[in-house]
Length: 503
Image (cartoon, rainbow, N blue to C red; front, top):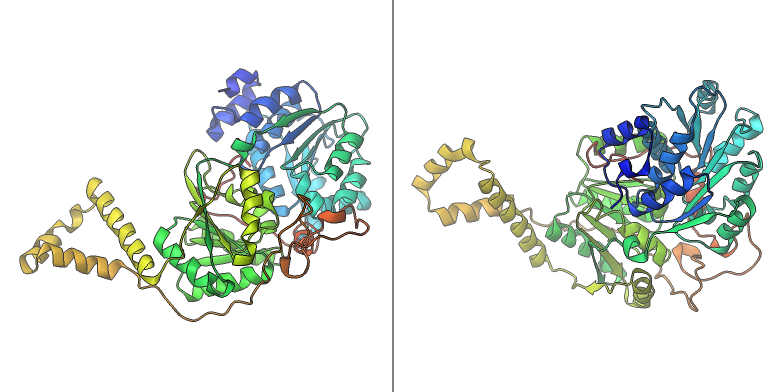
C-alpha cells in the first residue's frame, strides 16, 4: 500500500493530509497523483467513494502559487452539492499552503459570488451553468488557468452540459493540464478527451473495487402496491443506523418521505426542486443527529458524500446498472460493511441480470417480511443493545431500581415486559403512493439509460439535444435545476457521519 509520504509531497501538503487523518493512498490516488505531478493529462475512471477528490486535489494544490493573483485551477462539477464538497475538501488540503478556493453555483446570489471573485481566489469550483454566466458577465476570467478538472464527466453528459463544458474550455489557455474523472466512458466523453486533452494517461479502478465487495446485495420481489409496507417492515427488521432510500422521481421522493413520517420514522426527502432554505433544514437536522432516513433522487444524492450509511434501499430500480453501482456505493465505505436491498416488481426481474453483469455479483433473493418478522427483528435489535450495555457496564445507575423490581417480580417477566415496552408496534396507518410504471428492460446491451415517461427505460432515437443524444433522461430537468441559477442548494448529515470524506 502506498502512503502519502511515499509520494514525495511538500511538507505543507503532508501537514494538511495528516490533519485530515489520511495515511494510506487509495488505488486511484496512488496512480493518479504521480502522473499529475509529472504534468500529464489524466483520465481517471473511478466511482464516487474511491478518493478521487484527493487524487486530483493534491497535485492541484501542490501546483498552486498563492502569491499569484489570477485563477490557476478550475474544477467543473455537475451539481452544487458536489461543488461545495469539493471546495471544502480542497480548503482542507490547501490549509497550510493558504490556497484560496471558491465555489460558484446556481441558487446562490450572484452578486455575492461576484464580490468573492474580486478577492482573487486561486481555485474555482463551479457548475457549468453558473460558470458560463460569470464568463459572459466578464466577472470570471480564465486566462491564467493552468489546470482544469472535469469531475463526474458522465454525469454532466447525462445532464446535457457537454456544450457548456466545451464553451468553458474554449476560454481556458490552450497550454494547460486537464484531469478528467468519470465512472463510465461513453463516446461523447471520449470525444471531449480527444479534443481537449494531450496524450492522456488512463487510470482505471478495477471493477471489483468499484462494486465495494463488503456490501451485502439482495433484492425482494414485490408488487408496486406492496412496496411501502415491505420497506417499513425491512426498516423495523434491519434497524439501520442511517439509511438512504432512492426513488425514481421527485414526486416519489416527496410522497415517500411524507409517508415514512406518517408511519413514525424520522425521514427527509431531497431533490433538485427543493429551496435553499429547505436543504439547509435537512442539513441542520443531520448535524443534530435527528435524521434517520434520507429519501433522495439520483441527482440529489450524486453530490452528497455521506459516510455512516449502513443501508441503501432502492425503492425504485435505478436508471441503469451503473447508477445502481453508484447508489449502493453510498454504504460499505471506509472498510465497513453495508447492505443494499433493491425492490423489483415481477416485470422488472430481467433488470437484475444486467446489474449482476456489471457488479459481477449475484444478488441474494430475500422474502418480503411479514408483520411478525418486523416485530421479531426489532426485538432482536433490542436484545443486542441490552447485551452491549451489559458488556460495557452501562447500567450501574439503574442497579438499585433493578434490585427493587426483582424483589417484586421474577427476572423473566421483567425482561419480557421491558422488551414489550421497547418494541415499537409497527405502524400500519394507510398511506397512498402514486404508482410508478415498471421499468422496461433495455435490449441489445445499449447503455442509453434513457427513460420515457415516469422514468421508464425505453430507448429513443433522433438527433442529439445539447450534446445528450441517447443519454438524455427524464430526470434531466431535475438534474439541470440542481446546477443552474434557478436552483438552490446545500445538504448533508452530522459532522461525524455527513462530513466530507474522500469524494
